[in-house]
Amino acid sequence: MKNRIDVFLVIVGMITGFIVILMHLTGLWPCAAISKFDKLFLPNNSNITTIKNEDGNLNNFIDEIHYLLVNLFRCT
Image (cartoon, rainbow, N blue to C red; front, side, top):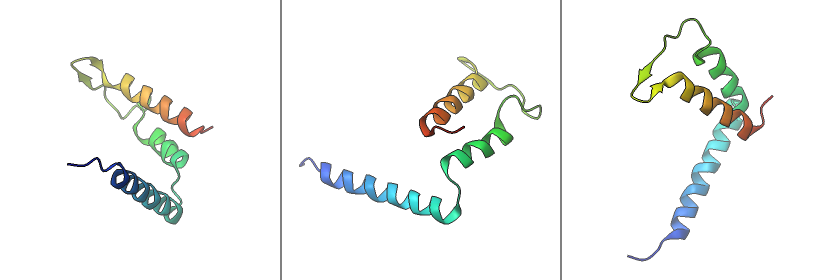
């Protein structure tokens, strides 16, 4: 089987373009989605109970992902 890196790059480009078009049509950009996520699912909300897994607290994992996404998209 040949290396088909060009096919992979075209697929990634088409998926990225499709996502950008959907974001433009819906008006839901990454920072807006993150801010809506903050209001609904962050562990500081009193409606959320602490979820435990094998490695400890899942809320710490959610906080870390949130921190990385905010810094990635440079949301204020």
